[in-house]
Image (cartoon, rainbow, N blue to C red; front, side, top):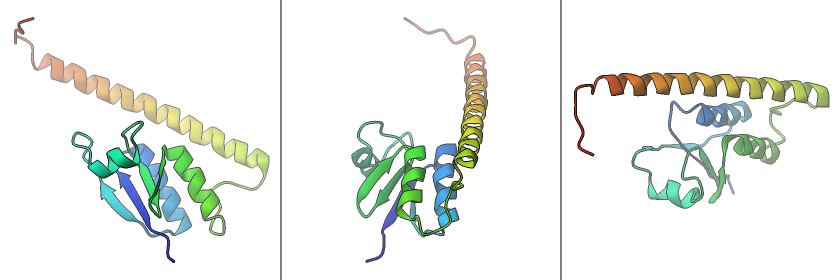
Length: 132
């Protein structure tokens, strides 16, 4: 029986990108389902009832949530294809350091972008009086 792999994702998500890269590195075929984060699908809500967010990998009907956990799962299940981390413990630690570094920098950058957008949106509504 062939593996059925479905990825619930939103294309600009850096977390989803991490999963898509792992799937590509392993050469795995999967069905991609784009999620509308403002109108979440019943499948997303069913597969990730705790956080209700993407990405979610559905492997043979079983959901795996959280991008780092998904990547580890992919590497463990398809261990016969292109390992995602080096076998040497020191080199693995170095690779994990750089992943963590990039995560923190991208998160910081994303926060700055969103806060700038919120400030601009707030400024464009100056002069509008709201009744409490």
